[in-house]
Image 1 (cartoon, helix red, strand yellow):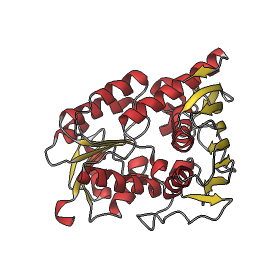
Image 2 (spheres, rainbow, N blue to C red; image 1 turned 135 degrees about the horizontal axis):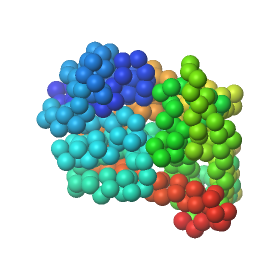
Image 3 (tube, rainbow, N blue to C red; image 1 turned 45 degrees about the horizontal axis):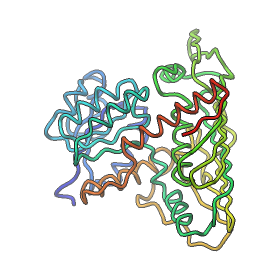
Length: 359
């Protein structure tokens, strides 16, 4: 594999922080036999140069569209703010690249549908709902499929995040504006809903209450106060295709409690929870599986020695690379992102109207 590594172009480089720095780069550097960070882009050439040096890349671009059109790039990792996804993704698809795009895919359903429709036949695209690649989650699905739980009856989920609390860092001010598409509903909510549907099957009906508990948000280190227009708390009650009923609470501004999913069936029960407390949400940490019955343990992580943000991203990259090499399509893709966006729209509608929604 070393002679034919996947050449990655990272869109959204920052030498000291942000998701590419925290998650993608540590993951990719653990797999240098399979991947090479070929190029990095940022909003200015200076920032790109700094990030490229920090990431160990080969080239730097102050123009992200120039990076995605470069013939020396095989796969584009889209790790910029959500409002910038559309232009980068469409350019990368037009240039014939494979794409790993962070979730949410677009600011709204129209953008997500446009990008999904633009994927040409044979192109490999992945949406970054990385917890679906966590060994514990994959193993839980296997146990369900093998009938160890019997008929699924009830699922209860608590999914907290420290974000969307009483204040926000300057670089997270944009997360308070619902129109930017990067909100508690889409990020903490979307990642959790993706796992719930993966395990329980698609929602068939739901009711919801999205609430804004803190409407004025001080920006740390300044006198600025911004209005929060997205929810900082979600409650979703639903019924799934499997017949299972579920409750979900997504709580913003919570750093002292951790994720927990309890699923009860007619023959047994499972619990998914965090091995280590992480303030950014369950998708950015090691997930462990407990069962009420004797079952083989979940497989170990394919990529060892990682913790927090990169741990599940690395597993996703391994699966994505295998799909590209085998020309298979097993990872969550842009069509899955469209479905998840539609689900979030239904939750919004249920909350705003007070009426149960059929999916």
